[in-house]
Length: 444
Image (cartoon, rainbow, N blue to C red; front, side, top):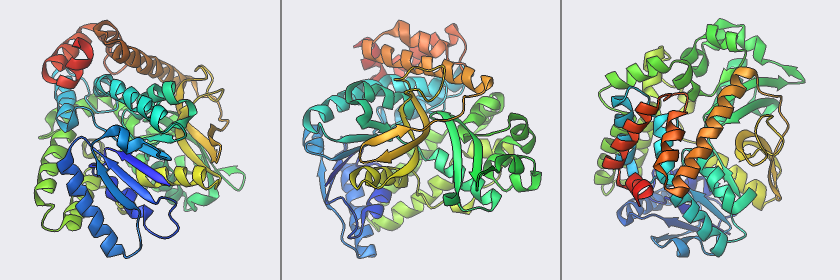
């Protein structure tokens, strides 16, 4: 079976490759595609050492910068691209912060601007996959994941599936807080990507979440308990996705980002320069040191501002997106039924959204693909923000597809975390001047 990774020079690729090693892997051919050949070569050197250290056979690895060659005949395509690179991410962050709003790459102004320049490329990829690998499933890692998956699904239908490791990370932490095995619990989670809530944790037919929310000491052992605070979680009656910290504590988030020496994007730029410069000495060790530092510093601004402290040791192994993607691939390719939280078309799952809206909910997965499972309706406070953000996502897709500055202003101005036409125009004017990839979309 052929697996293609778009963004094959990306930092998470060795995690995927490590999981593919062994005789039980269904993947015989792994194709890494990237527009940056130097990055491809660096990651290939890491993979060679991963395989040598592991000792088990791995798939045959091919490197290419030709998209058609990469996806031709593929059974699965993992898409993990970054249009505009990390420099574009830094612009998203700094331009937004200069205008007094959050620039995080998936939430608020940063997410809209990132989506505007990414959607046209995502649609081109989807068209190439539809033509040259019509039977393939495209598994989307690319942020903003819900928006990009919805754009791709307009070409590929249900064969475009989005994934995120935030829900499964949340489930593991809550299970530890309850002292139960994650495999023994059913987690009811629903919303959009980076905008969802865990509402029930059913073990042996009983919802254990109220028990956790009422136990302050136990709740403080869970990262989300420290991040949001036990009082707020008990008030909500649910545990939000960690990215909702940027919503519920938005003023704190903006202040923390503005006072920080570096944005997350600036940190990653400096880190990657160091990694790719040192990869020749000992590729695997250089990669693993860098990977652990990335994991330790994840959402550091929110944890410092909230007093949540350091990340739990169990969250530092780096196994997130890669494990979800491979579980999904094995369930489909090997007809090994499982349940995963995925970004898929809503069908009739969440009321208030139409059937084609991409949502993030538990799904049943087998050889026929992924199907959303029934969930309880969202509460009013959840429904309102989900409906608003879905409209923003769709307006962003239309703006990117049409190359319309007018629609781009609308998408940005109507985002609840921007909430200003004047601010939206100022952000987009600066973006067009500083980010060539976005200028190409909105100016042609």
